[in-house]
Image (cartoon, rainbow, N blue to C red; front, side):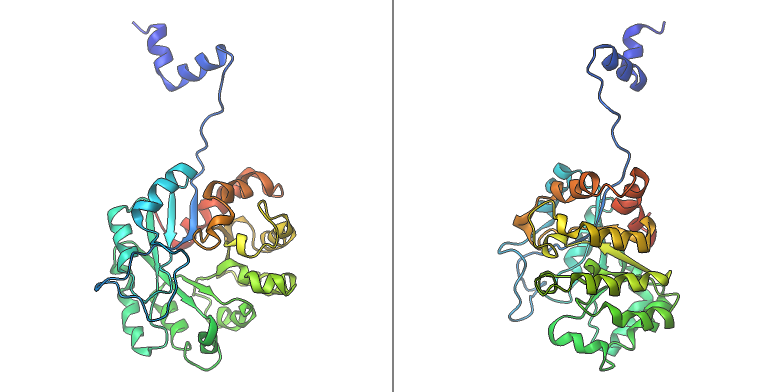
Length: 305
């Protein structure tokens, strides 16, 4: 016999029972939240030697064991691990993906200055959990965009079908010709091309304009990420709202990816605050928009099933 007790034991019954009691709660969100960028690293060791002189974003390692409970507390379902610039060793990030394939996947680093690295790309995704490549053009390495060092990489990555995240503060405008020459290359702009130095120089609008100009290329998308270091204000970073809207309007929800780069500016906002910034403060996004920006778009872009 289907009793009242059995009925209340069902999902529907529980909802009706709560409503009847006057303490109904809204159904849990089905939105999958995916952080499009975090770093994981462990202490320097024989199998994971840091390059001389490098400095991590935090004084202590940010490990798998540290990240997982923070993800659970904040409500983050998955993260894309971008190995930090301590070395070109992807092993620890791949360990995370191997141990927790439902939570971690990797955009790996590659020795871009070595054309012999091209031989690695055709088999890149044979590493379990590897989704693509992340390249950086910072400091002296910024010259690689103009001196020919990186020229081998773009056609090789396109041929291998590898998505590429690129970090090039203030130089996003240099990627238009690359996107045009390689329409099959999936390019993802890191952090909208903006950092603290650019913000302090008053050049945020100019650099955001460079990112917006890339929206005409369907093979380009953008990470709305590391915002705590692009803002000159405390949470909820309202000085960025017009810039975020400008990027969002140009690229649309399916080509915008929420991300934190959590360990950069770690003390300025919690993981939960970086979520509520988008879910509560950016009112120009609809619920459907947020579903895409907060996770669905990066899963689709990187083909992370």
